[in-house]
Length: 418
Image 1: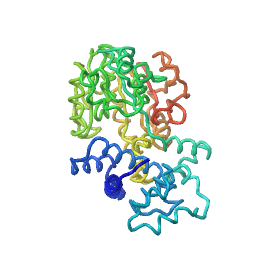
Image 2: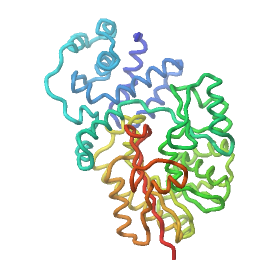
Image 3: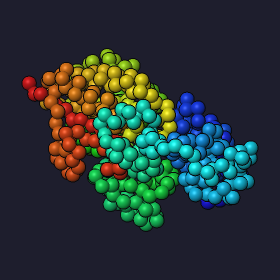
Image 4: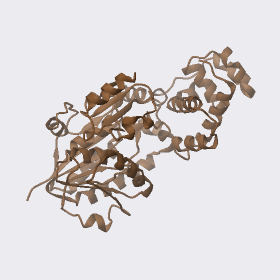
């Protein structure tokens, strides 16, 4: 692996701006690239790939090498993770020459489970209440790997076979996802945002786990459906397609900037049944007006996002135990408010991209205790009806070390008929 002085300097500068962990790493990196428009595609890829790979392994690098600055972390990363010899790295040592030569000497001490799993101590403490040490380590190691690129085809405009055929003809390596009937997993990182299939609305980027949440809701033509925390609309678009662009699908969110990102995606999708609506909170009057009128409601609740650590490794450094506790309170409030929309016999799906029980089972169990008119429906049973053969028990619980997708949780509930 050959690293130029300019590449190393740029990566060091980018990492130094990210390390305070006051903002999302991808946002900082995007701003960094805008400030350096002279970077070519290869330089951008090198910087981004290096920074995110390092963040996934930062804890171990700090423990084993004592690296405490962006420059030292990068030197340790290239040497310990990428296997670049110190002799090759010597031109990059700069003021850290004395420290860098000490990389040859192993540091004393036995790494903790948290260090080996590359997870904060407080997070490991939470996980020990629900997993064995071996399971925590397996999860942590899976989260240290880069995530694959998953796409979801638009069934209104194409088929999975057609998309796979086009990719094969173009030399793009892609396969069908193992569980989602509409998923395509692409090898490498081709620039798909400029691909004809993407521009035509035939494919969208969406993790397979996220796709499966929509199959749990299983909306039908002519129904009234609500995506309660729609965000940029990835799930909204799939729900609309499953409804064959018929019926009425509301996309609610409290963030206008997130809903604005749905607009161009919606235009590409050719869907006509989606109605984005900005709300001020889960108690907005527009929510109350739909009380007990909605057939199906999806609550993909705001959460810690730990299930996406392969893609967003900085989250583990920007989140805290207190923050997770505050999210849990918010999740309960949102779920209770969304439940008021569900009509008798209707379906409610609660989901997060987290593997923490505090955000998942505890929220659902508390809701069911407080709302006896709702009954838990086994997730595997619902998926089987949708021709998805995946059984993780009563709940849908996905993890990268088991299913190869992001970490997701979901529970299916039904309001009892009158």
